[in-house]
Image (spheres, rainbow, N blue to C red):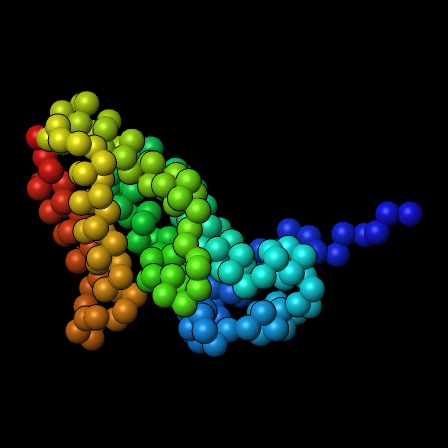
Length: 191
């Protein structure tokens, strides 16, 4: 008789989401596998079975974030650079703990943990492809598409990071600020 699968995809996903939330709130050094398992209403053996240990769990959480982010960018690609920029902000605001986990660098200073390069790179492909298309159609200057994509990414990433950090005056209209930045980026790289 086969043993039933105890640790399914739902448990795995719950562990990844809770890991991002706990690390965001407590910091990577203070979060234990026992904390994660308890918050996910499962056992530490589930964590070890599914991930192997803390470093692997943290890497999986970061990779899961990049996969989710990449999927949102792929869905928005049909709307061009403006659509990708808006999707970037929408995703980050919907997943603030995961966003900070992916981009803060806090994990790397604590434990040997960084995103899988292929997963992180794949999440940015829709932006590079949109830049290339915009260059081919004469909308953007013809410069190295990777360079242009990184410059654009830096602009939107910086604004989203400031918004999430609440680095603003009370009542600041972040949506309007963000739209103005997207328009500015488009003008800066226009052909």
